[in-house]
Length: 213
Image (cartoon, rainbow, N blue to C red):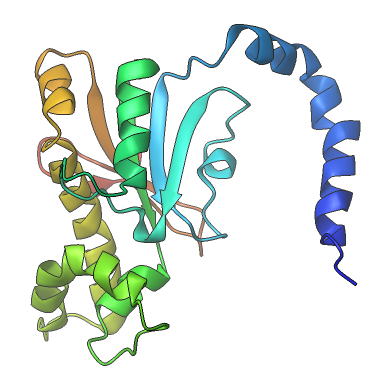
């Protein structure tokens, strides 16, 4: 018999008896007036790094898209299917968001796969391999760095990938122009799932630092 996962039903019941009760008016307002978040977050699909949880965000506060390894592909108006680009278009053009945050995290499986040239495709389509080829050049350079441990290589590529995604954001003409005009800011962040620490990218140097440090 096909059954819906019981833990999801339990979670929904808990939500309806708790958070929804506390925020009922906010949900009604969002339903009637629509959403107007000021920030978009591009995060990884990893179940351990949900941006709404990390940033303790309420409903309507963030517009979020998640994909493998929180990658932003370059601007390619080629008529193909581009989920991340579609979300960017909606966030920038329709919602008029003011901030875009690319949030990576530690122990990312996509990044680990990119660092392992011997990893086999999970299916004939090799969708992950093709997707992660967007960071293959950086992965090769980092993997050949004998001065790093494998854990250091992993963290390094996770952070380089965030920088690359921000560079790719600037390949979108509307985003590039809005940033130039001061109407949009681009940010990078990296979440350590083992410690709970958040590191943010310095916009000038590209280094990652702890907020307030």
